[in-house]
Image (tube, rainbow, N blue to C red; front, top):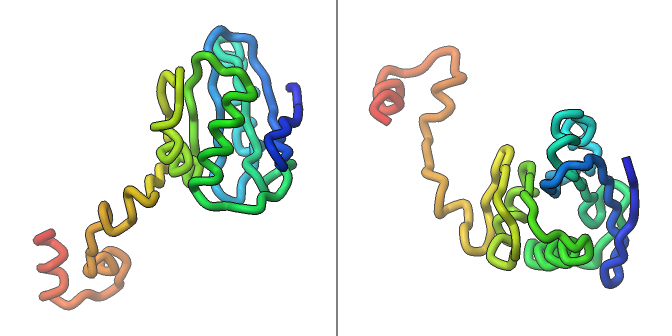
Length: 159
């Protein structure tokens, strides 16, 4: 595995690269994680044959420097700069949790991205606030309650 740092404006971004395949996968971890999360994929011999794989530490995570701004827009702009600095011509973005929100925010700005793999997707952004896709379900606690009143159980079942 090759570890390197990218210098993007005032940031130092840690990267970890492995694999020799013709395809490229760029891994974006979730909040409070680091590129270490992707070790099983980075060390998978079959994936290494088919892909060059790069995992990054987002600003303020892992071995990357802290950022003056953690807004989704700033991190999205930073991800675009990372991809440009890596000179990726054709690639797949793979994200986890908050990394999927970052990918969704960045997607309209991307060139040559061939696809996405999103694990535990979180597509919240300014364009998609939680209220736009979460339907309130007050009877949800019924699923974990030991004893439930009949009328609440009927409402739950009707949903």
